Structure formats: C-alpha cells, structure tokens
Amino acid sequence: MKTCIAVVLLLFGGICFAQAAPAAGPQTAAAYPESEAQAAWRGLAAGYVRKALKDQKLDRDRTLNARADVVMAAVGAAVAAIDPRFAKDSWKVILIDDFGYGAAAFPGETIIVDATFLRTLQLNDDELALILSHEAAHVLAGHASVKLSFMANYLGKEKVPTAYTALLEFLSKDAYATAYRPTARLQEREADRIGAAIFFATGYDSQRALGVFDKLEYLETREDQPDPDSHDAATVRKQAISAVLADLQRFHASRHPGPR
Ligand SMILES: [Zn+2]
Image 1 (cartoon, rainbow, N blue to C red):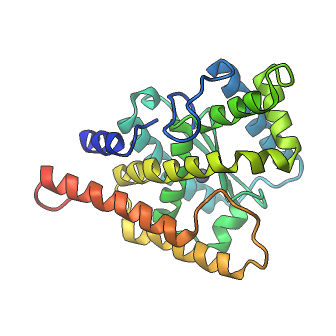
Image 2 (image 1 turned 30 degrees about the vertical axis):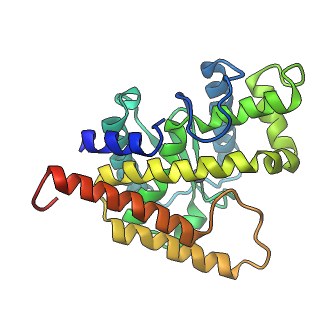
C-alpha cells in the first residue's frame, strides 16, 4: 500500500500544507523560516480553541468527539504510512460549534472541524475520513507557509517582517484572500489529490465517502449568494477525487490481485 500511494503521489505532481515545496502556487522561496511560519499558525489555532473555550463552543458531545477521534487516528496512521516526516506525529481533531469554516488544518497536526457543519451534513465516518484526509493533505503540502510567503511578496517583507505579522495582516482584510484566491484554488485541488491518496490508505469506503459531495452540492444550490470560494464546485471535486481513487484502485489491484 505504501509503495502504491507513493507512486500515485509522484504521478500527481509530488507530495508534499507545511514543509516541502508545493506543486500548487508560485514556486518562490519561503519568506520565513519554516519553524517561524508553523509557530504563527499554531498560535492562531490555539487562539481559536481559547476563544471557543471562553464562548463555551467546544463541542461536548462525547459520542461525536469519540467518533471524530477514531477517524482522525485512522487518517493520522495513513499519513504516517505515506510520509515519513509524520511517522511519529499524533494528530488532533477539535470540534467547535459554529466555527464558521467547515474544517481547517494547522501545522502541528491539528484539525478544527465545525461541529455544526458535521451535524448539518450528517457526515458518516467515511465522509469524515475524506474531509480529514483533505485537511491533512494541506499540512503535508505546506500550504499554510505558502500563504505567508505570498503576503511577504505581495506587501514587501518590510511591511510584514515576521510570519506572525504576515498572518495577522492576511486575516485583517478580505482583499488579501481575494488576491490569494488563484493560488488557494490550486492548493485546494492539490489537497483533494493528496487527500484522496491519504483516504485510500485509511481503508474507509470510497463510495460512501464520495456522498459528501452530493450533500455539498445540495448546499451549493441552496445558498442564495455563495461567497466566492477557493474550492471547485462539489461535482467537479467529486469527479477529480473519484479519478484518483480509481487510479489507486487499479494500481493496487495490479500489484495485489484478489480482494483488497
Ligand atoms: Zn481545503
């Protein structure tokens, strides 16, 4: 399985949101040391958790949290099998009510999931595994650091001398997200491809997992005025991820005849 995933990742333009040069986005040198960029993002994640704690928004549903932990452990194990940089890492999933983003990944192997989103979509474990795999893929691909380097290039490093100031500035104006959107879209596509490979290694059910895009498509049609989004439409994403999964299945079957 490990070899199989590694080959597919090579086929799709290189593995790896944190350390290695990403296939998506401008191939410019990192503007800040990796440790500094990661510390800035970890600080933001810690800030979200502190605020949720203060506002009593950390989700207290034990069953839901236990489910999320089990799925996160499977995804973390898949990541470890694929990328040796994460072999010893333990991933955390934190459920926050009304977080505002469906899910977000942070360096430090932390994924925050909007518990309201999870309930609204009635996500099953397979669907949750696909979402967590996508989020983990952002971390593997170093996307968070690319965003901070973008800010340094966009504004000049004298205006954002540290990774932390670049992050604060990025969050301060919607205009930055708009300028970053073309890169963000490439990163989302990359996270879908790498995430599909991670998901495949978890052993969760692909067909059931892909159902999440039917739910997202339904939400898209219901939104009166959807915000501009970095993601492709749900149907497009479903197709792209299905194609990667089909390639992986074919490759796996060719090397391991018989039931998987
Ligand atoms: Zn994403």
